[in-house]
Image 1 (tube, one colour):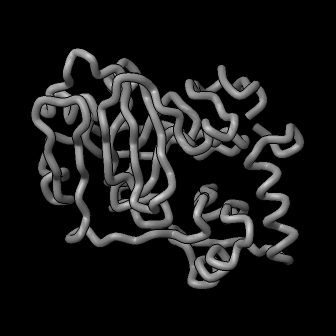
Image 2 (cartoon, one colour):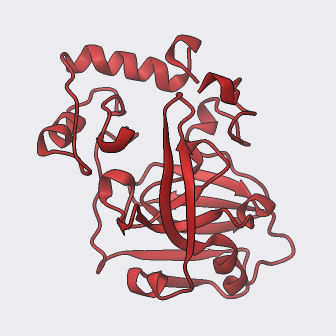
Length: 232
């Protein structure tokens, strides 16, 4: 969704530019100290406008980029399941990996092609937990303390939906939502929740952060938010 279409992201980015003044370009595979300081002082709470290395742009809804070490990281899987569990970072990496070579498409129009992702199929984690019969959807929480997302159970079980810990052959850094994030290949990027720390099986879809602000719950690339692939 482009800014001139009046999207929630577009308006906040525009106001952020006015509040921040002159905006430079962040380069490299991780955020520079200057960029992180700029993000902390973003009055809109969405420091998202600067392009990063390789075509990436970095988004946060809190005005900060939270960080958690591999040693301190845990992922909780619970809700309507028979066997709730918690994984450390090392335990997650020890599970059978899935590799995907897919694009990352943002609803605002930019795309990074042929990204190499590695992680664990979300379906495998659900099988381990044992989803109960009344579990129909998932709610994802993040350790930024603010962002949430959702999927239906059928969407979550697709083979191209993973809990990712590597991007282009390297551990995912905090600027990309690491150490662990969701990657939902066929949907716009706001479904791929960063800084993931919780997966809860629920009875129905609970709209996520941007969905509460007017974005589509089903965010298939090309089919939602008034977009199609010819517009990207």
